[in-house]
Length: 165
Image (cartoon, rainbow, N blue to C red; front, side, top):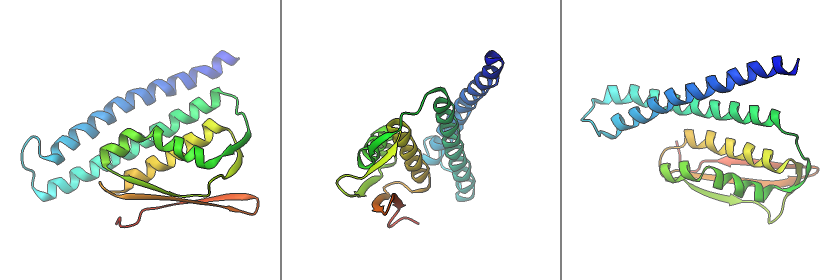
């Protein structure tokens, strides 16, 4: 019975991988065209190509989320007190390459320690996913501000993009 349950998961993992290759190609080639590496493009065409590029980035993030979901199903969560500030810092390091590529600046307004009950890896992965989604919507050189505070029995977080449209 367990073997039968693993087949759809393996199929979906392979499908996600194959889609990621195609989406990466669309993303890369659209970026080459947008930068003008292969010649000038009229503004109307560039506008449509921007839409294609943004959609490819969004789809890539969806596939990342799905991959993380599959990984999370495979492992046992280990719930314990975790410093959410450290989890945000870990999340920032997980997406460092895309941050550098888009020249985003991150700033944090968090208490020195903010303990929450969570699985440390799952929390950092979730924060990284939120940052990736935000990055996809913030133009190059944009600023991303992460704020957090303790509210009674909960921690509250906000992601803002000052000076971004």
